[in-house]
Amino acid sequence: MSALITELQAIRDEHGTLTPALIVDVARDETHPLHSRFEWDDSIAAEKWRHTQAGELLRVTFRPMAGKPHELRAFSAIRGENTPTSDYIPTGEALADPFTAQLLLRQMKRDWQTFKRRYDHMAEFHNFVVSELGETA
Image (tube, rainbow, N blue to C red):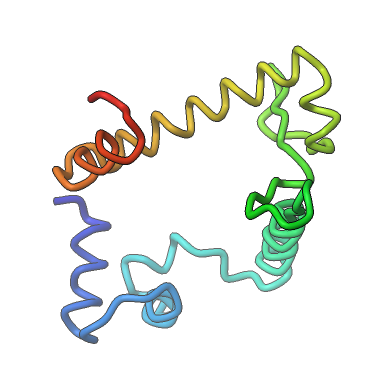
C-alpha cells in the first residue's frame, strides 16, 4: 500500500470518517506527512481557488430544446496540440466545425474508456453496461 493511502487510512481510523475538509485540517500540522502536499501560502492558494471557481463557471449547461430533459454544456474544452491547457469555445461553434467536432468526439471516447477502466472490475458495472447500454465487455 502506498504511503498516501496509509496516511489517509490512518486519518479515517482515528476520526471514523474521511472528508477533504478533515484531511486539510489534519495536514495543517507542519509535522504531518501530508502537510507538504498542500499549498499553505494563502495568496497562491486563493488564486488557485479562483481558477477552480472559473472552471465551474465554464461547466454551465443549457437546454437546447424547451421541455426536453437533456442539457448540454454551453462551452466545450478544446485542447491544443502543444498546450497543457484547454481553450473553451461555445459548444455549438465546436460542433459546427468538422475538425473540432472530431476532437470533441475523441475526448468523449477517451472519457468513456477512462470511466469504463475505473469501474470495469466491478461485476455490477459490467452487468449494467451490458444490460442498460448494450455494450460488450
